[in-house]
Amino acid sequence: MSTEGTDEDATHEVDGEEPIEVGDLLDDPRTDVEALCLCALLWSATDVASDVSDLLCSTDFDRGVYGELFEVITGQVRTGAPHDPASIAAGTVRLPDAQDFDTLGGALDEVTRVLANVAISCAVQVAQLPAAGGLSDDSDTHNPAARCAEAADHLHQVAHHLGAANEAAHQFHNAISHITVQEEQ
Image (cartoon, rainbow, N blue to C red):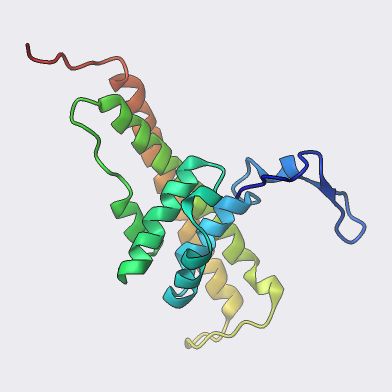
């Protein structure tokens, strides 16, 4: 999210541990605040997601692709449509002009990469839930830690499949980027 007005060299010490630097939060989706915000939005209840969509806008995100993904998610929330990861994944690709195959390849590459990163971030967060305590499980097992582990495993599977999709999209993009369509004269 926008760090406008912040010092790039700023650090924040947390309980005597090594200081957290601004650069520490930029690339790893497990610690990237923008990716974690999108992850939370994907898994939040509709009323919470609606509140977040009222507070933020796409320009609050430093990474343009995150802002675009935020718009897709909040668009679903505002219309009452599902905003879970699968529903968002189904609606994230907006087809460009038929002659712009390179753009399509780049979009597929970027969207699958971002969604894979979001799935990984969510899996890490879900796996850490039991450590926070205060969980309950209304299923027959009454074992919230086991349910969280199962959910994290499923998210890792989603991330694996999205990673494979990203590899295919990346290869498509590499292949198609050398092709142009000649306009009819």
